[in-house]
Every structure is written in C-alpha cells, then in structure tokens.
Length: 312
Ligand code: NAP
Image (cartoon, rainbow, N blue to C red; front, side, top):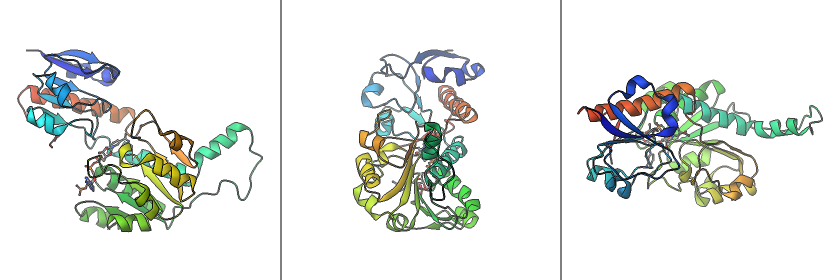
C-alpha cells in the first residue's frame, strides 16, 4: 500500500531513494503554503509553521517529521489533540552545530571578519602591534546557557582552549561536570561571570526573549554573546544597543527572530559575525537528518513507534 506524503522539496537531493519505497510523494517547496488534502505525513523544514489551521486542513495526517532538532515551528498541543505524532532529528546534528558554535566563538574573539575585510579592501598596511587586538581564550570563562546535547558538546571543546566552563540547565549533568570540570550555576551567576555566553536552550514560551535589555546589562562589560540555538531567545534591538554602546564586546549569531530578515539595527551593529543559519550544514549531518525524518514517517505509517518522538 502506498501512502500519500508531503515532503519539503528542498531535501530531495539529500534523500536516499531506497528509503522512499511505498511513498507517494508530493514535493512541497518552502515558499508554498501547506495545502489542504488527504496526505498522511508531512516532512517540513523548520521554516514552515505547522499549527491548528494547517493540521485541520490535513485531516488524515498521522505524522509530522520535522527536519531539525528544534520543533518550535510546530504547535505540539494542536498536534496532540489531533493524534498526530511529531518527531525531530536529535543527536545527528550535535557535533556539526557544536563545531559551528566554536567557529563563531573564534571568529568573534579574534575578530576574523574584520581581518578578512581589511585584507580584501586593500587597506592593510602591514603588521601593527595594536591591530585587531582580540580576546585571549585561555583562562577565561565560557557560560553555556543550556547544557543538553549541543551545549555539552560545545563545553567539551572548551577544555583544550583552557577555558573554565559554567552552565545552566534544569537538571544537573554530573557526567559532564566530571568530564570537563564544568559547574552548574543560576542564570544570574552565569551572566555575571562569563566572558563568553553561548545559548543552547530550545525556543519555548519560557526561553523566548531571555536575552533582553535587563539580562544584557547583567553581562560583563566586553563579554561576547553566541547564539546557535534559536533567534527569538534574543531581543535583537536590545542586543544591537548593547553592541553600539560597547557594553558587549561582540556577538556571533547563526539564528534570528524573523529569518531571513535581520533587525536592521543588528545588521548595522559593530563587532558582529552574522551567519545564515548553517549550524547543522554539513553534508553528513544533513543526510542523516533527512534519513531520520523519513524513517520516523515510515515507522509511524507501518504502525510502529517513531524513533525520535517529541511530546507537548
Ligand atoms: P537538548 O539536548 O534538548 O538541550 C536543551 C538544553 O536546554 C538542556 O540543557 C535543557 O535542560 C535546557 N532547557 C530546556 N528548556 C529549558 C528552559 N525552559 N529553561 C532552561 N533550560 C532549558 O537540545 P539540543 O539538541 O542541545 O539542541 C538545542 C537547540 O539548538 C535546539 O532546540 C535547536 O533550537 C537548536 N539548534 C540549532 C541549530 C542551528 O542550525 N543553528 C542546529 C541544531 C540545533 P535539561 O537538560 O535540564 O532538560
């Protein structure tokens, strides 16, 4: 029996055709609205909102398999009410995203983009003892706001750089503490003591806007903020102001509140490294993400439990 499924058109080239047996696929481009119809599964990109209206328009839907670990684009309560199983792609993107977080840490602390722009502009006049002085990592403190899979992977990479690691999480992480010497603190202490604050909590009603004028003011003068989690954790205008005033020493961002739009003041702010949401963008990881998403659909459609479910 073939099943009618809606799959994001943009993942077509990453999928293994052998995985698609028994699926009658409608490819859905990201710029097209979610259609009405009798599809039984949906594999959306994280940019597609799947809420009550979309679910109502797909009355036969049994599974939404997000191609991301974050699932803030899906109304979980509405899905649960309609008995639609929601899945994500945890784990396979942890190392790639941790690597990119480190790319941002190094690019901001050592002012890589300014250096590249100087060389490209033809304005570089040679070595100068005070040129593009950055922040030395050795002996400084990295604060992980959230220490789940990705936060911990970022923390493990901090050891060879000689950083002290602090973290916040709802539950203690004894293995991580043993492995890295990291210490669990509350949000105030994390903001107050960290030279680099890196965000790794999911976007949720509790975490939205957690970095705002008030919390930014509690960060050390000259500290650096990194965000590879979700854009709406940060109030972008407040961050732009903190950069303009020189209170923050820099910001390295991969994600934004209203992608692909970026707050104009943040775009113009000094000492930023702004990336186009490429945290998990390696060939291996993206192939594994789409493979897990389709495996989740196949499991649900054959009456088995999904591999990586998420619940409201
Ligand atoms: P995870 O393993 O679930 O870790 C989330 C962490 O956040 C945990 O430490 C958790 O605490 C903490 N947390 C959750 N809700 C919280 C709350 N309300 N208040 C305080 N802490 C809270 O997730 P992950 O795999 O590391 O992924 C983290 C996020 O990264 C994802 O949600 C996604 O949005 C983002 N991401 C972005 C990219 C990108 O392309 N830039 C790629 C991958 C992932 P406990 O451990 O105590 O539960």
